[in-house]
Image (cartoon, rainbow, N blue to C red):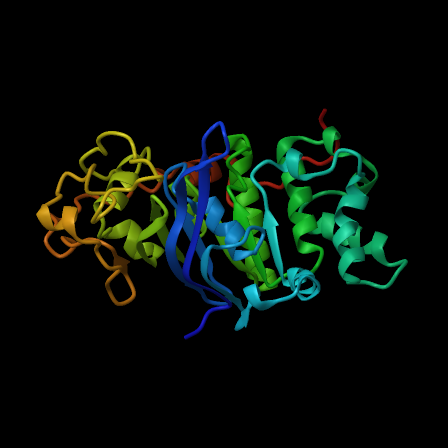
Length: 353
């Protein structure tokens, strides 16, 4: 079954130059990634900092151009579109950035910022923009009076709600969230995650979550793709990836989650340089189970619905205790238990400098 968004052998290498401007290699930020995102699903892309997940998100929206591969949205090849056609298509694809303050123009009021996509894509008739902005702000839990204020007058969580309202303004089918809650206080993260879940359900959105926080991912995602050094090493339904991970790297990531209860060997050393990744399996230099075949041959991403790029995935020792120790083990669940279920709406009676 084809997905709303499909990535086929996508790659982007950034040249590395010396002080004289001469090419000395290239950072293989994304190096042959294929993914399919079904309509109405929530896919999480996870991995260590520097693994290429944010670059992959920007490639999917054609904010940066790939060196090779295809990006198809609703069956249409985005790389084949003209600048005008791509601009029109962007109405259906939006991005939520990590830092809500940096993504909002400080010289624009909230009303102007949220109304800009309405004007650009002519979503509503002229004169109806103000009412639509008020509706969008209420949708994300802010009062309509917030439209007259400036971004710096709001707290971080409120600014991210404004950024979400702006992303919703054009009526997109796909939203990519690049670490949308990592810049927020932990007391606010659960509220924003609950808001995103409500919007995904009520509006029928397809959502791609880029995150390093597996607690958030576990709470919101249907499927998970794990990236390491520019490639996908494991992908599948979230319940299977979290409950029975098939790649040693995924096991180590889960073992690092506080309260997860997983037991796995820690990852030794630092990731290899993306300029010169190791031959064979890129994880073999840090893998406690690596054999000669891992150093010599690149493992395919193999499996039916739960895929893993590991030569030894059928011979690894069982992953023990890969579950929460108790119902309150997950950080988000603890926060929601503290605030009550569901998490309360934020206090929007005032604004914060």
